[in-house]
Length: 350
Ligand SMILES: Cc1cc2nc3c(=O)[nH]c(=O)nc-3n(C[C@H](O)[C@H](O)[C@H](O)COP(=O)(O)O)c2cc1C
Image (cartoon, rainbow, N blue to C red; front, side, top):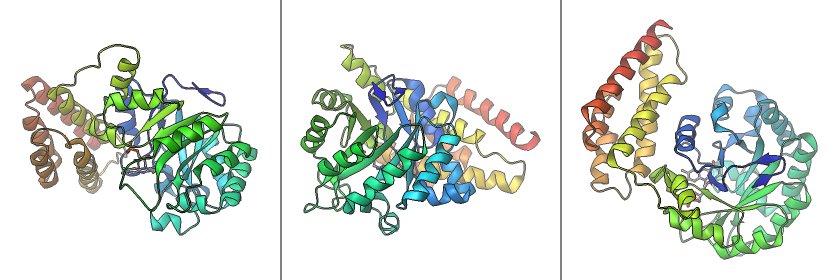
């Protein structure tokens, strides 16, 4: 599958999720296989143009994540074009535009899903960006603003004409937020009417659903919450699509994933002082709490684990909680202790 000049090794991708799909998480999912594309959390075009450190951190990625799309949000064509050039300069393979975020803080700035309410303006944003960069420009949208304005089919056509190389559609309106269910008939209708690839997004929480959505006529499937619950879901979908039995994921695998995530986070944003270390640990604990609220869904005794993660008072306490819940072998826990010792030395002496 191709998006402009970029070849994807699989048509299944991790959907962008603010606060969740950081570089460490994306790398781990990618290492488990089946993932053809990763997209960063949404990044402010304004923040990129102004060079704000926090914004630049959200856009960070590593080579092993390629092909990588950086998703930006904003409403001003010139600023979006300038931000696209910055994304291109950062070496990203694709720049994606957020036309789906329903959060008022974003929508009131004429960005996110509110762009869908002004389709001509939205198309001007895409035209300005495609003129400014050589990398493919893609768009992620919803079904529309509300039930009276389900204009994704018309807008999709307009952004295609403005030069978009692919689009993704989450089949809910902004007014729906996450209630009800995604309208895959609408997604299919759009896929059937465009020449560029169309990804569908919404409600795939089992690998079988990804495969059946894929076979229903879209070129690719973006999976969000399903990956947060089961980071192996894309690999399992790939296996199913190839006619093989999907891999089994053991409790130990699930525990190991969380410990690996902690290890990767420990290596990031490292500074050489004690006060930073305390803040850094808290940042990691908060990241695990955010993931834990999804990761524990559907697990036997998952609500107990969720409560235990939320009440862990230190990073070491969190590691113990994970170790005992997933009945990890001594080997696994001692490996993690070694990692901690080595990271602590790194923190203090590097
Ligand atoms: C916590 C969370 C954060 C999200 N952040 C973004 C975002 O930054 N950009 C975006 O285009 N979509 C965002 N989405 C929407 C997802 O990309 C996806 O389209 C939606 O969740 C439906 O797919 P799913 O049912 O597989 O989760 C977010 C969704 C969730 C649950």
